[in-house]
Amino acid sequence: MHNDSPWLRAFRGLAGAVLIVWLVLPLVPLAIWSFARGWFFPDILPKQWTLSAWEYALSERAGVIDSLGLTIGISLAATALSILVGVPAGRALGLYKFRGKELVELLILAPTIVPGIAVALGIHSVFITLGLNNTVGGVVLVHLVPTLPYMVLVMSGIFANYDPAFESQARSLGASWLKTFWYVTFPAILPGIIVGGLFAFLVSWSQYILTLLIGGGRVVTLPLLLFNFATSGRNDITGAIGIVYILPGIIILILTARHLSGRNGAVGGFGRI
Amino acid sequence: MTHVSLKDLTKVYPGSKVPSLDRLSLEIPTGELTALLGPSGCGKTTTMKMIAGLLTPTSGDVTFDDRSILREKPEHRGVVMVFQNYLLFPYMSVADNIGFGLKMRKVDKAEIDRRVGEILDLVKLPDLGKRRPSELSGGQQQRVALARALIVQPKVLLLDEPLSNLDAHLRFEMRDLIRSLQQEMGITTIFVTHDQEEAVVLADKVALILEGRLCQYDQADVFYKRPANEAVARFFGGQNFIAGQSTGAAFDSPLGQLTLPQGAIAGKGTLTFRPENVKIGEGQSNSLNATLEDRIYLGTQTRLRLRVGDTMIEAIANPDEVGGFDVGGPVPIHLPPQTLWVLQ
Image (cartoon, rainbow over all chains, first blue to last red):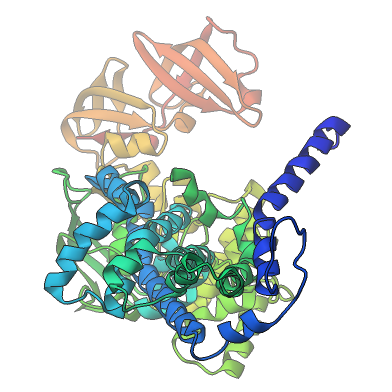
């Protein structure tokens, strides 16, 4: 590292700057719009500022608050279910060799490759017969399709570096399997649960097509609401809701950033995507 | 205070036709320190796991004081296993590791603290309770693992290769610690090892297991003096095996007629004697004229490769005794009758 030429260092700095601009710049107009009373070409900034878009967005009749609560609920439920399914599945894939393991891995990865709309149309007809269409439960279940691959891959990465003999040791010292899980297994896999859960939450949070199809317009999550306002040309309200919509992602990212370093075994699982 | 018996204990792993452990029967008396000795893959670790309840036997039984324990869960058996790589829980302090078993038994906090302090003194690590396992040396980690096992006063203590990860100077220290604690607490202890030296140094009795079968179960010195068969003798470093015919008093072989000790078996057999029992110089009986083919100087001893007629003999001698002999020249040797042993 110390021998890097100044050119290389400058290049690295530039690349970092471009990346930050790339990620942050699109959000700037969003924030400006949410405080603007009209913003027209060729003005660089709006001529008049107002809080009215925010007043509307946070009022009861806009439905943003209700939708926010619903979206958080759905994403939390999808995350919890992903953890419940992903931890045992990741354990099986990370620790054991069995016949057909490659096929199972491929199937788990499939939702990240197959277009979501194709999957959703198939699930739609199945859910009609099950009576799950247009229900919040159905939306939670369908969100598992894109969230599970992340959870399972992260957990299989964690379990690949995990020695189950620790559990044997705990059992032999007098711990029941439940206490063994709580005191020995859980602390060891917690970083994976955090990282996998974070991804599951954010993937569920950003679902649009799946929610629209399975929810049938009755389950209105934030991205659906956002899209309604965006297509109706209300850039100011869209801006305000957009800011509300990206906040959880930023908060979660800040809270869990230290778990996301490349040294973390949990992130290693992504090498296989 | 537990008498352990294994009765026809057998394990056949799924998908395997050959049993990993084949009808092992052993009586391990209360408070004894027993070694299960054998090369890797011989079934000794399988045996330990079945006693600990981490593995279910295909058939056979394990009893503690004549009561079968096979139906009991591992956490209720009163068996604690100390693994070869210690397996200290990395998220807990040394004190929490040691207190883990008591916590699982719902002992109250103050009592746990008191007993952890006591046992830390006992394993000579008095001030390390607050450290993390990763901050300790290998030898210290093993003491912690041992303390963590002993604190729950198990009925049976299982040790997996207890000395093999340690440096030579720590081995004897650890050996003394294990033996003194085990005898003080009277815990029936079984350990597995692939190293015959480790078995001999630590155990009251040794069970040699080869290819899933018990070959011999005896006190350590018997394996050297009276091995059950050639495989046992070879495992313990025996190198001289000479086929011939025994009359009970003498042995006819390519080496000539050799006088046997009293009680030797008669009939066709194999004569064996340990390299270190080949004596240099003329003796009262069994004197032979050998030719020195090769020698390897090992510091405290010299290994000799001798030829008598067409038979090769391996010997170990004091370097001072054999310094004067030249390779290719004659060496007078003798085989004291009480060091000879006839295998069937």
